[in-house]
Length: 444
Image 1 (tube, helix red, strand yellow):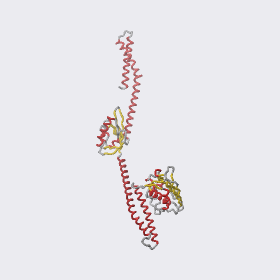
Image 2: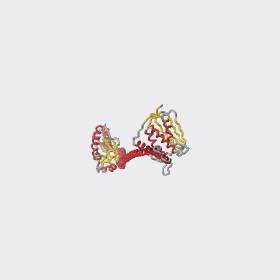
Image 3: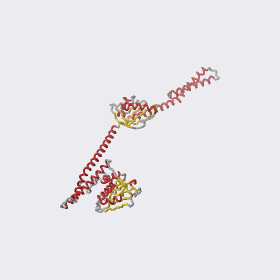
Image 4: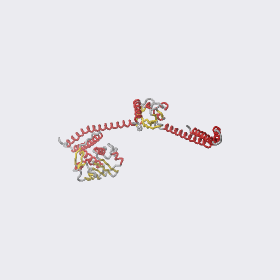
């Protein structure tokens, strides 16, 4: 019932009541009959109705009409704004009732699926799904309506949708539920992620290709290194035999000098090949440690003379009563000799190189080699830690090497669960530390 009708009905009731009351007054003690009194009272009430209508009823009706008009205008504006929002969003918005019948299908959804809203509104929601998902969706909605157990509502995930032309495509889907007038309404937000999935697939393919190329490279390096080591060992062996003149004199001392050069070059090349082989084994996951317990200080003292330190000042700071170290002894020597060789190579004549060996507060053995050489900037340190990268490049290179020393040391350290740390400053020098964990250190 409208407000105006209600007010008119109340006015009519007031009119009747007023007539009846006035009739009672007129009958009482006047000798009038009830009919005459009622007629008189009705005439009096009719006379008082216009003032009542113009002073009370009409202003109230007009005020209520303005309120209703404003409310209707606000509702229309809200509906118009909502429609504009639905039409402007980039994501598809699809609403359906609890039976899975489509009620809302915005322009973005039209663009995604290729249907117009007129084609889908009133149709079942599973028309937008590939056949394999349509039946399972119907079963899921039936089960949810009975049990209230949700598996997809309120959870975003990637599913497959089906376009008007039958194309199946991946889409992000998020579904929410609300209740309107006691009925469930389901709203899905969808976004076509075909391009994103394509890019992800390309990234995965590129990663797999890179990993395959890296494995092929590592296997090639391992095979090449193995093949090169055999003839090199023969060169070193036979040059040693010839240089020793086991089968008679050479006749000219120059031959001995050349044979010495052959041996030195072959040994250098063998060391390089061994480094490449070790790096390839580490990258392919085939690097093995042969662990034993030994004295780190005795080992360092025993191999320091393997590096020519005649042009620099070498200092040793080795703590007394160091614990024994559990690791691969041959790899420990290799780590130390690589660090010492690098420090000596990049230190000018007369410069200082210091070997530090001590235990820290956590009981870990720390090996540190510090030099006062050319040093490196932060960017150069990053470059120096990459295999085969060279800071000193070009035909006029001053320092020999292929850039395997520090990268190989770092990988060998990390494979032993130890810590590698490098600090360097251009023109000041470089300090490299290797910290072996306490579980590898044992008291004598």
